[in-house]
Length: 390
Image 1 (cartoon, rainbow, N blue to C red):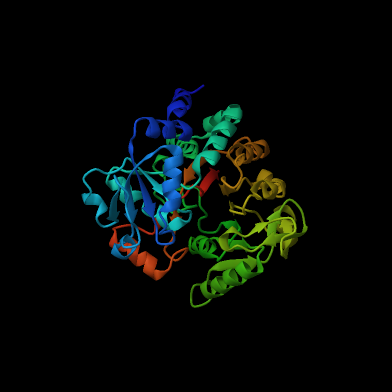
Image 2: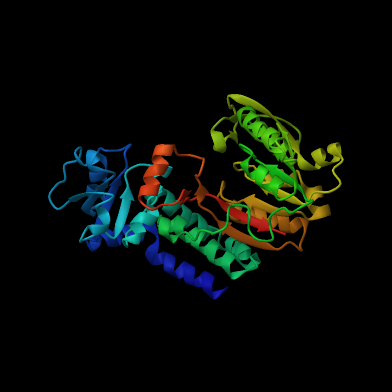
């Protein structure tokens, strides 16, 4: 077994979430809580710290207005985000008071001051991930060894490690825009499939690369937003090849119910809405496409089903692919293994991305807050892992 993989497993014994919490409690290491605007009540976090026997030394709030709502207890220092860098005795670990992407945006801000940030998932999920990974070490190791560059292996190990430590700082985020790893995105003249197009932004980017894009979106609401973007991009002098289909991609033709949830819209039994689905092999034959050069997939856990429905296409043309590998825990190995079974000559790379929130998730007031603290619009995320294939 590769030494780096073995080293990772050895480190997990001491850095996994449950062990880290025991050390924080035993050594009375200073800890903090970040109260974002939607959760100004300190009592619930205090109860958590008391139950876990943690040393709460700092309460950080957004601004002076929020500061007026919180009464620090003995031994607690109350500061605003602006005041935090000048705090003399900073906590080693910062906990979040609530879920959501807004507080995660300040991961880098706290890290500048030497403070690490725990994610939202907590002990139960982190320990479940640890046990799950330990049960599937052979599968994880095999995929680790399939990856063709050192950076992919580092990202793969960091991704798993952060899942068992619950520390956002343990992730290793890629610098390039998501789906645009050099050598793995569509180029001029390519026929590209965008599975899970959402609002069409990524499809438009592919079209601007010179590709002929077929964007698939099962949700009626998302489809209309995507169609509006395609109409705009195809017209107005753009001249892009950007076709939008109101289908979900799956392993066969048919209908299924789904739940509308914006970018997270997903197929679900007894969902309130119904969508049409098609397998890519059937679509390619029906449209008489001469080939498929590229496939991007982000379809909320249905990636493996879609790959089964694209087996002929993949086997025949070996398209470059960018496949989301985070919706299901087993995606870390099932996707690569299936693709490898279709074409043994595929090369694999692995990257993990922050979410680009330039025009997504946050409003203008929130973005102004991020700018005021010297932050970008790239949000650290436990999701957005991509398996690249060519």
